[in-house]
Image (cartoon, rainbow, N blue to C red; front, top):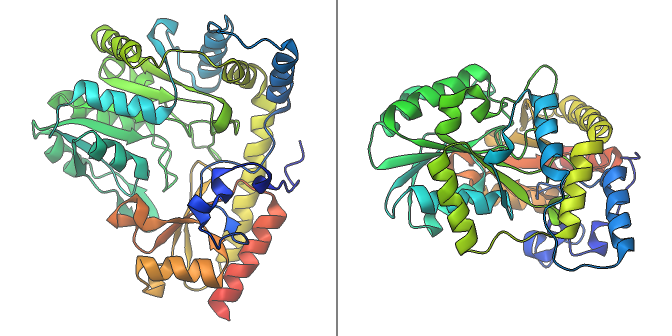
Length: 387
């Protein structure tokens, strides 16, 4: 597992390096915006896909018998979540599951609560489904974000606000919500009839003693008042060749989801996705341990290099391979900060303002890349900020 290997992502139409993300003149930028890794997929995944290719027949297929057991075993072993296979539905991707949940369990004009700065696609899903974005901003205090539970209580008490999109762990600020924090969310939302829809795609990348807690694992009541969206896409760097799972414990909501999946015909199987996901969950643990350690060392490098660099500070992450960098002391507008990072530092990262107005003055940096490439990018930033 050579994570130092620098692979040219431009040899395939990778979104991270494509002009639709970097622009027509972004060929030489440090591409660190899109949330995937610049590492080869786990050997077990590659071997499983090669074996499937050698079979040579790609007609219609059912779900492999081993996939759901591999998923449930993974959740039990790594996250202490006893997941009932009967509660698991397939989904093309996590965003699809979020959109279906919004369309099924809210009405046009209803409010869906988000906690910005937060994953920008939450906003698009809500607006494109003709729902209202209701913001309960995270609170930044001494370099650490926390939830505004008083604000959540007020918003949840409004009967027009019927759903919460939860990001657990949180993209982009890197918080791994504690069991106590999640329990407070459950208490508030259950009391006011607000359904929690939890995006848990970053679950497996955590640092130190921080432990991801599946929201639905809090207990039967939390499971009944939540929908969990899972995928191995981030954990094993297989976003382009995997699908997702929706966990719905409530039988009425699960039945509605099944009917909607059928109506939209999103219930077909992709042979490569099936074998990739099963192999990842069954045999990918050692690779994931290694990649987590590598990313942690990349984080240590960033922490060291930014410690004495005026004008930027690191919001210390507890999980994900995405860093939230604070450039507010430069007093630049969002457009000027983007131009500075792009033109002076050669960085193609995600604009903080994309995650809500609360992200103004910030940028999101993806550090799941070879260390030498990251070191060069940090050199470029230091030169831009001191030159």
